[in-house]
Length: 436
Ligand code: ADP
Image (tube, rainbow, N blue to C red; front, side, top):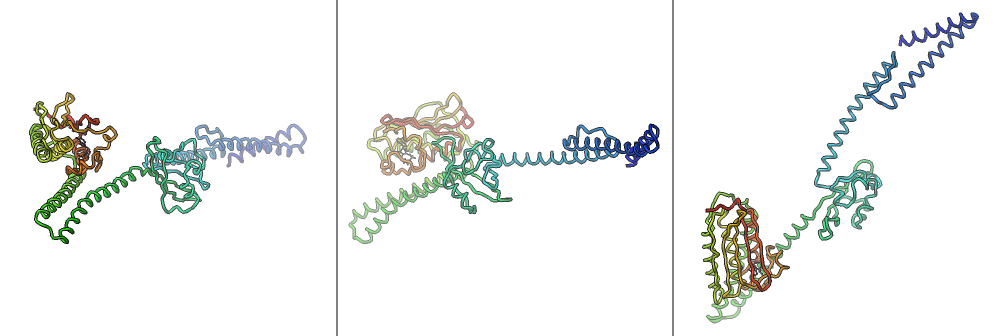
């Protein structure tokens, strides 16, 4: 401040001296005034210089001014630096925040008061079929062309979520998207989206499963209660009584098999995969299930089937013995039940060159048409419904085999065509196989 005053006084004094020296005495005052004007112009220029710099707010290039202007510039520079640091950390926080929303498995769209897209993460853009960059600023109702969504937006009642058909990766793979709007701020809206395709599929499967089980149990139960009623109301002679009791026992057996298969399936689904601790001889497993199958064949087929063992070097397999036996015997019992009496069946374990161990059952039965093959392991899926029922099938056998194979890290494969028999393979990974 003092410096400014000194500058002003100096210029006024120089102006006065110049006036007094160059002209008469009454020019001294004019000279002093001129000195003051020159100082004001000079000071104004410095103020303009500083204002220009403030407009640019460039802390890296500060004007070189002295005195109070220099102090002002220095202080402003410090304030600007502080603000810049603050802005940088806010930017970083915002980036982090947006990256977190980007990583969310749910879709997030921010809408302005008019319903235009302000920001969207990639998931939401995928769910709703728009471009998160190009379509910024577009009305969301123009992007999501679903009457349900349009009505939802217009209603203003956002207390519930809605479901619409998503664009999906392919037309053959439709998706179901759940949407809900949450108003916030000044009439702004947060639109959240979730892909519920898998949830809906699981729900449908659960409903189908319950309906199937109920149906499977109802049929033998109806037959059983019919016989009970008959026996209660009509006096029967000994032979009819024996026949009825035989039929009732058959139905009870059917329900028992169904319940037992259902329990097996739920045990397989609910328990952890078997460890690699127990090593079992492949030959031992094979002999056991082949003997069982021969017994079954003698009981249900005339003439019995020719069941042969495919000779191959035995090896060790690791897993749960009871599960492996159950899967193998399911495959063999299917071969026996679906191949007409006298037919050929071959079963055996083979060690593949890639180290996998494969159990195969080949039969000379009716074979299976190609369109049924992908669905064979679905629960209650049957190609030949009446043959399955006649022979005590539950429709769960191959589902059990698939589960056992998957729990052991393996898979099941079917080769079959109509009239040419079928071959079922259950492959175990090399990690569960050891040569003897
Ligand atoms: P099921 O208890 O009815 O036999 P599975 O799940 O074991 O049920 O088999 C599903 C369906 O696959 C059967 O209903 C049958 O139609 C068909 N199938 C299974 N194995 C054979 C086979 N070896 N030959 C012909 N069809 C078979």
